[in-house]
Every structure is written in C-alpha cells, then in structure tokens.
Amino acid sequence: MANTRPTKETNFLRYEFTQEERLKMGEDLAQAHNRVEEIDEKEASMKAQIKEKRSGLEATIGMLSRNLANGFVMRNIECKVYYDDPHVGEVSAYRTDTGELVKTRAMTDSERQMDLPLATAEQVQESTDASAKAAGEFFSKPESAESKK
Image (cartoon, rainbow, N blue to C red; front, side):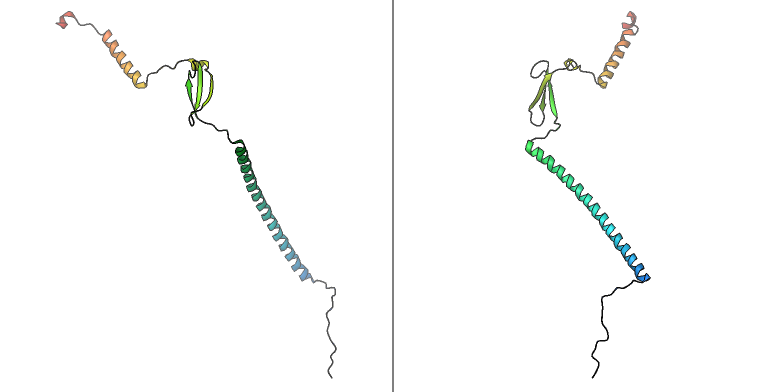
C-alpha cells in the first residue's frame, strides 16, 4: 500500500523581502505616485477650464435675465439735432431709428451764434484773381487822349 499522507502543505507565514524586491517595489511606488500626480494636475486644469466656462455662462445668464426682466437695455443711439425747435432758443434731439423726440433743452451761448457761409478754397482763389485784375486796371497808366483816337 502506498503512502497517502500529504508531504507538503501551505501555511500563511511571514515573508521577508529581499533587497532586490524592495528596490523594485520602491521604483513601482515612485511611478505610481508620479501617475497620481499627473492625474491630479490634469484634474485641476480641467476643473479650472470648466469653472471658467461656467463663470462665462453664468455672466451671460445674469445679463440676459436682467435684460429680459427689465425689457430694455441702454445703448448709444444716434440722434438728429434741430435748433430753434420747438421754440426759438431751444434745441431738440430726435432718434434717427424711430424719429422719437428724445429731449429738448435751451441753446448754449455758442449755439446761438449763426454759422457764416465760408468760401471754399476755389472761391477764395477766384476772388483773389479778380481783385488782382481790378487792382492792375486801377493802377495802370491812363491812356493819352491821342492814343484813344
């Protein structure tokens, strides 16, 4: 009859790592730590980007909400100005987009002064030429009576 008794067994016992195993574990630990750091940096960067996008959207939502609730927004609108309108000494401004009267105010001292029609450069040159011609005729020697005959 053959021996049926077990000759080996496995027990849960303390195992001391060798120096090479400890070195390998240290390298693996450092690599894992570096990977966690990279992931944390990516996460922080993504969170910052998401936060920036969210802040922009929240600002847009706030502006649109206020404008919708108010029903208007203030803008610079071009207006046409009329002097002595509706009364002498007053200035009125009318919106160019709707024609609506925006405001009426008293004229300033400088606005009360009439604009003078000033000559263009061409008109000034014509006047100068005509004056020179007239001066030349005026100061020229008179013709003698004999030369007129």
